[in-house]
Length: 35
Image (cartoon, rainbow, N blue to C red; front, side, top):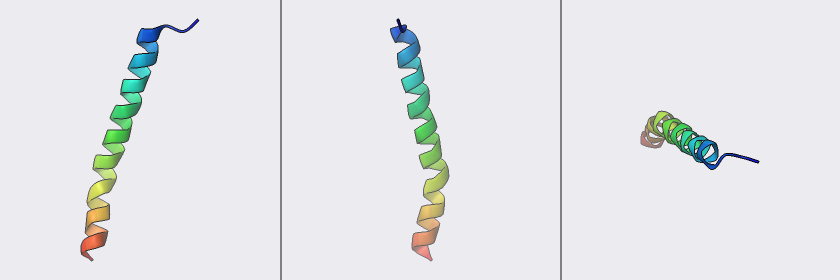
């Protein structure tokens, strides 16, 4: 039996991590494209 609040908080944390990785990697991708 899983608590829905824990599940939603895990989902939010995962989305935040994905967004952070995107922000971190995106400048390198843009720099590579500019080269």
